[in-house]
Image 1 (cartoon, rainbow, N blue to C red):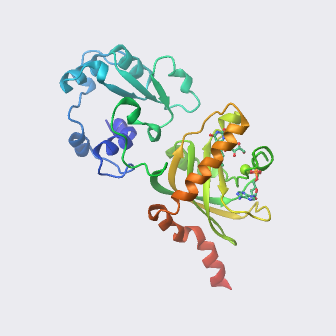
Image 2: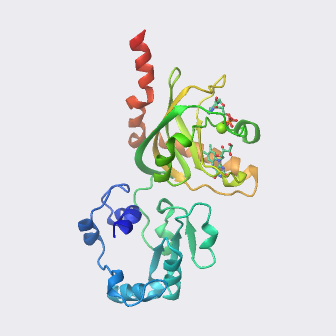
Image 3: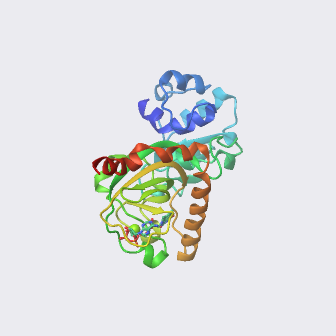
Length: 286
Ligand code: ADP
Ligand code: RBF
Ligand code: MG
């Protein structure tokens, strides 16, 4: 049960229309949100048998064909389809989305990408101007060398951070395109849009953290301390068929981030001490 609650936080909260997407629910709240709960102990055969979903539909007084199943396991996806329902698979295995594609109606990388309106349900209310506010997360360290591809291949420099230093943080956040504020110790605080993930267009075998600072710099700043405060999500990583379409999309991400960061909801984070603590430290020492 813990597992279900953890995975489904985002979905449940958004359904409830009152909590922020990232709030954590306790079991009592889950009971308040779901009108029907069927446990594995209430059916005779487990997934991939459709029994549990058919029982839920019955208790909901719904035809199976008007039910949407959200599943993260392959037996669960199969069970939903055998029950005659629409199924969205939330892949729990990075880079393995193909495992689900033959059966599921849609495969998404995380619940951040669930779009209820695609299935005739009301849209989540917390998207704003193409962005989804997230619980702020903080990540920082020295700027490291990447593949040297950002500026040269795309014309878009990204100040890479080490992923090894941030493994647990990365496992908490699905790969995708995020935005927020970036602080460089000796220079200032800037708007930022970044990709976190596998860069499917380049078939990377390692996850990377690649922030593009939305400012023109006259020089590189490798080795400098970079602090990121991530405040929102834009979209999943996509394997574009051409570099041109990847570049066009990244520029669209930039426009979305630049505009959104002026909203009070996001702009208030610009003054977070985390971003310029080293600036203060330096002036203190001076
Ligand atoms: P790498 O693969 O080594 O990350 P890139 O081509 O992505 O190389 O270039 C990134 C470097 O360019 C950064 O580490 C930074 O020193 C510099 N740089 C200059 N302007 C920017 C910017 N606006 N955003 C991010 N990095 C920038
Ligand atoms: N690479 C991809 O393969 N797919 C993407 O969807 C993608 N989106 C990006 C979005 C932003 C805002 C940025 C800055 C980069 C994106 N990249 C993407 C490119 C990738 O992260 C990296 O910058 C390049 O591989 C160069 O190292
Ligand atoms: Mg880079």
